[in-house]
Image 1 (cartoon, rainbow, N blue to C red):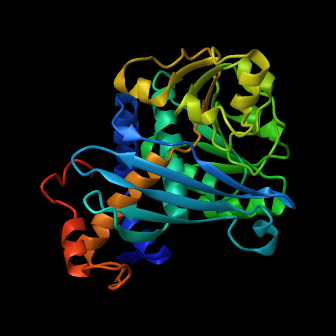
Image 2 (image 1 turned 120 degrees about the vertical axis):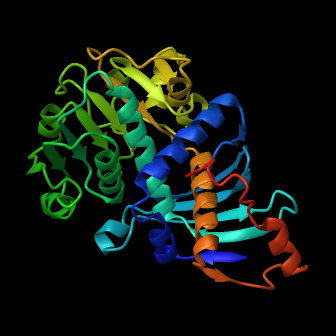
Length: 349
């Protein structure tokens, strides 16, 4: 059993944003081709703490180096006021030969970076006809920090970055820290979410909202909205935009904005395409005159694919801690069976 802590994962992922984006692109393509298994996520909620939850995301991804396992991720928004991370996660990878667990990996950074990479990839696909000169970030936490990191790696340099958070001090601190990601950009702290929505044609929403609280009327026509947190937009806002998702069956659950829109209309005709369809050319991005919302549920296949890539890199670099005797059986035999093949190293950069 290989155990990788947060510092191990951060060391492996440092400076690899473009590799992560390509891995996410390939995983979305495989998912659209049907080369995955993705049961619905399991939500563990608490009667006395409705904002808190722990989610289990099992998944399988095929390909030259197939992977299976589970991400177990908690979200406790009250942690922000305690000065600790809102989200924490662990990823378990299983051998596809024996079923034995072969890796236990700290998953918060993996989760944040796969989320950010999917948002940046969607921004790239949706802004090909008109590249934005700036971006507005609503919600100044870990996710939008990573979203900005990946946008800066994938898109042309931004001239302006506008940030907003319900806590002005948090927004100001975010702007100072994020300036290193976009050294040529001017950073502005917006006074309201409405001001932020109107400020830039590319917008990322990453909040802890549990109910819709924003419409898109302040946005300029043709804006691209990365609806990462899934519950910010009103039904009217969703229905008034073109909608791209990662997986319609997954995103229309658990009272997301799209789930509420489905309940209101009795169907999913308001969903225009999936990101996998865009990648494979089975659908085309809406024209630059239409406002487009990208709503990614956050598919477990991305977590598992990235965790497996991190494990492979860690084994090559000698990073992490190997524990023997974790399960009954022959550890050396298990290790040999679980060792990744290096015959297809170019498959996932």
